[in-house]
Image 1 (cartoon, rainbow, N blue to C red):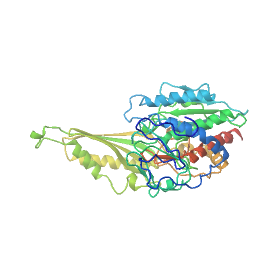
Image 2: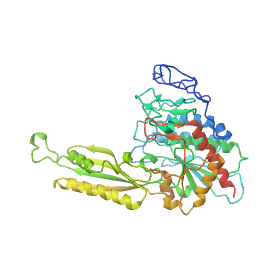
Image 3: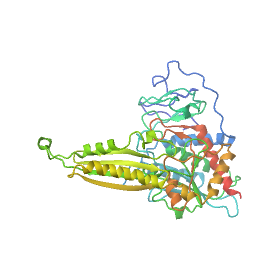
Image 4: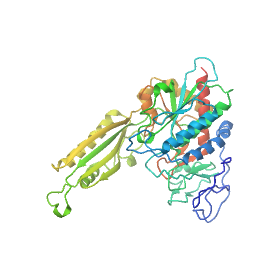
Length: 460
């Protein structure tokens, strides 16, 4: 790949239009009016961000093409071999940058060190992103499209009848003039969290090439299986050796997050009595119907992701595998307050017991698996970790946005394990869907913030 141009498409596939609008070529959803002059290019947040953008985009487009989708029913780490493909690529690139200790451990974690350029007692600081992508949408065969100087209008992607409409995505509409990256419409993009990976790589490459910039020792880690709640499970905190760390796994510029949901996964297993339908009268106990009744009995107008916001928790059934003989229902249960989380779990348990209990021949198993804690309580004792990040954001001309995450990150578990790890933005949006997109200008801002973060920790 040369510069920022889109590489040749595979036969029968799609590549980005290299006109000013960056849309796919005619025949792939190009509006009848054709290309027209977009608004003036959006300015970068700083000359530093602009200088990082070319390398950042080149890396990002390379990384998203690697299929790293994780699997929920994992029996090994990482759960899928594609994650190792990207991790090996990153080890090679880190060594090319000059981080000669870069390595891939037996569990699929990448670790590397960028030595300090300052003397004294500056602490070791960590930078972390995850290589896997969500199993919630197709993740193989990603073909990124760069929409140069996005015009603020509706974007019709060439595959899957996927439309990005600013009327439904006001954040997208606000990015007129930005260079927006999408998939071709039939897969997710992978900005969650390959935007974070690319931003760390571009910032570290810049720092390695500019030893005149003050920095403490930086430890880099790329983790597997974050999307299935296992990203920090086998993370070697002692080997990492950092006083604190930052995940790059947020969204809008300025986001600095030190509070997350506490998350658990509830699994309901219902065993019925399966009988040939010809002799089923009075004998069949249909587990699939019982599971449907459990779901129907849960609140539909409250306590769901689609009806809650801000600090409200929810119960989210995300997978149902059912036959007449057995049904397994998996749910994510979330809240910022542990007592409320316990109430949500109790509601699900009570509902399942009441529904299944009507049929004495059915059997119910109820399992609660902790996924991640609210990082807030583990970060409250380390105010300087957040304060330095605020300093770095303001150095890039970005005002910090302190909002809790309606989800979790590797930093949730790592903070609980003694490594204070708040979360920073990446510039990606509409995660876990084929509508996922990212702004190059915002990604470049995130990379620049990493450089400022290093400087913030190098000085008293």
